[in-house]
Amino acid sequence: MHVDDFLKELDAALGSQYILRDDQDKVPYLTDWRGLYTGIALAVVLPKDTAQIVAIVKICQQYQVAIVPQGGNTSLTGSATPEASGSQIVVSLKRMNAIRHLDLQNQTITVEAGCILQVVQEEVKKHDAFFPLSLAAQGSCTIGGNLATNAGGTNVLRFGNARDLCLGLEVVTPQGEILHGLRGLRKDNTGYDLRNLYIGSEGTLGIITAAVMKLYPAPINHSAALVAVADFPMMMGLLHFLQKRASAELTAFEMMTQESIDLTIQHFPQFDTPIIHQAPFTILIELFEYQEEKLPTASSMLEGLLEEAMQHAFLGDAVLANNLSQVKAFWQIREHITMAQAKEPENLKFDIAFPLSNLSGFIAETDQMLRQAFPGIRIINFGHLGDGNLHYNLCAPKDADPGYMADHESKIVSMVYQQITQFAGSISAEHGIGQLKREHLKQHRGDVAYHVMQNIKRALDPDNLFNPNKVLIRHDL
Ligand code: FAD
Ligand code: 2HG
Ligand code: ZN
Image (cartoon, rainbow, N blue to C red; front, side, top):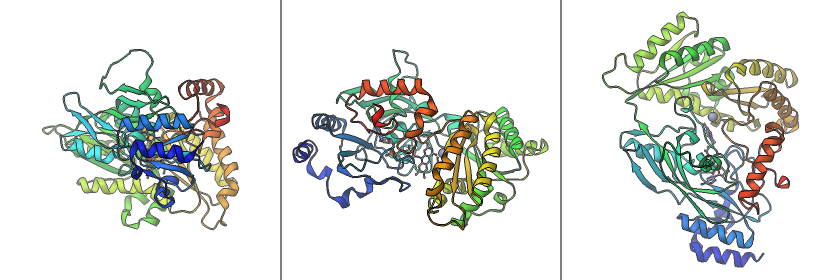
């Protein structure tokens, strides 16, 4: 391969200022958010539209250069980071950030893949509509990345994940063809569901260039509470009680353990409030309110429900947000757990899901096993409990020698993964496989599922040029 010829062709297609070659310019694109992986890229390429992506893909095919698509680079599994070989290019979608069409009658918005999630949320809000996808990285992650990872976040309980919010995609295939699927249909049973194949494929099957996303009526108000809960039976009782009594309004049921709260307050003392220290678990509950004239309001409804739940002994104490800024303050605690853990030098993340009926068994047994085998280990367990999704993360003991996690990682991972299998869980609830979990996919999903995935990848990307060695291991293809 003649690198110079390859780069010259890219220059001609995009303009040389959009082909980053300088080491300093490339730095922000080469390391993942957690700092676990750093790669090397021949170039970072910044297309402005779908036609330029087609051109890039065709040039890459001619020179057999692999492409790593990248949105906001907030992946927690190293899925948007190139390999260390230096033979790949990063295609950053961040210049492709136009809002193509807002269709209020159809309650949809058509956006380019590089649109920042928060920009989409704010845009639709101006039109009294609501886009429900919500996560702590929303200021920098993109719709393309959200779809490529099938992101979840904090409103899944009521509105579903990125997949559930998407009605259509425009995709550039590894052959450089454009799949035109921006149709905004809520029903469409015409053959295989290609949209759902690309969603969650982590850039390994195609580059998503635009998407039609569903909108909802904007809530007129939010109410939230922080609730102290002593144990799992109480927590499940509370969840079921709220689902039964407020299923239309209940949008979030997020769990934080005392240890995850302690770590957050240690690093962000400004978010401290007495209720979060009262019990082993704190639950953040949010209700949306839609009707102006409805009585009781969401806030008084939540208050009434919590009083009733207290009589059933589903909770200890509770604090209700008095206004929107307090609702936001409650969320700050929950959303800063990840930031707090990022300040700890040595940590492991397990983004896992279980049938709700198995959650408490997994936690009780696994906590005990880990504490016994690794005295002092800090279990930073929190997550989207209503979805059965735990962020079962670990930090090294406070007094541990440097290198503690690296020394024990393989033993801890195999212990936790065995437990996930035993409790019929998933090794990735929402962050995907990327490079972090690729060695575990085959065993976790089984030979047949893995074989079907291999066949799909071989059929759609026979030269393995789209994000190779992510999700599926290179030598399996
Ligand atoms: P990137 O990180 O750039 O890419 C992610 C993957 O998508 C890579 O495989 C990449 O190749 C591929 N990709 C990106 N754009 C495209 C495209 N246009 N076409 C094809 N492939 C593409 N995730 C959750 O699910 N729920 C959460 O609550 C959540 N919270 C988070 C909080 C923090 C603080 C952080 C740092 C991350 C969080 N994440 C969460 C993980 C991550 O933010 C999301 O998965 C997000 O969806 C990734 O979007 P991105 O644009 O940053 O994608
Ligand atoms: C969240 O729910 C994100 O806040 C990040 O998915 C979870 O830090 C994590 O492990
Ligand atoms: Zn999450």
